[in-house]
Length: 319
Image 1 (cartoon, rainbow, N blue to C red):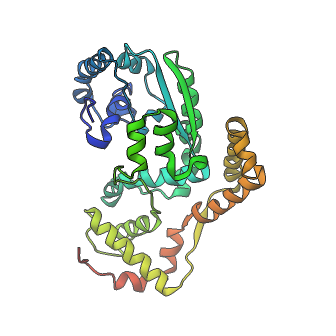
Image 2 (spheres, rainbow, N blue to C red):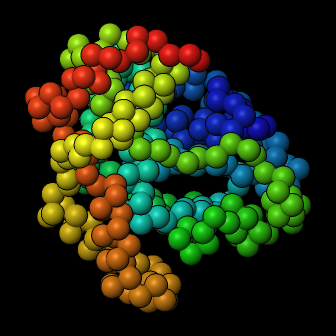
């Protein structure tokens, strides 16, 4: 939390990667020149002071996965440190892609509700951008940092192998930070979790609003949460099977083959211990069945199967 920058508390690490984007906002950053300008002085001053005190600095941020990061600028911010180590987590694509989609659309829920952008289904999102999204996956992120001369080492951590103890594994086995390690093992960790949820009924609710099927105000997250829950409950009570659209078989096979290549190359012993190709295929097929199909909203609305639900939809909910 001591790092300088606009973002604070748990987002403090975001300051460095966002200010290493060449075009700031235009290249996907949330910051602008006015925000990042002061970082050119404040961040190197902080780093120099820590270096003079022989302190180690830990910077954590998902946005270090950005493909457009300016590594020369990052090196500028991190000097005079010479022993720069990078840790990247690996998660199988069939788990990581749905999770990442859920996090992204969650950040833009109100934008979608206002009609300022189209709420993409997971199938649409994946089909349009799969090749681009691979650049943010752990394997390619690790490769980019390995190619930087100022990076001493890159550690690729398999979250499937360490399971729910990823944080403990990192601090205890990689950093060997004894005090932090002990605190984690004693349960003294942040209460905030990062567990994604399925957003298909949220997308359904917002589309119903845009098509005039419901008249509810959806300008606040709580309104969307309540409406989404109500809609899903009513569909479950009707015991109706709604039509879905699924990811193309060719793309699914492409994802599977890449997973197999990744694990053979970087985690061969663990891969074989999980049953090799057969074990991966079982895990992959289970994920595809559960996560890689989305509601076909056009067919649902055209069929009128849920018109009675929309007609009786409450205009407001108790918060």
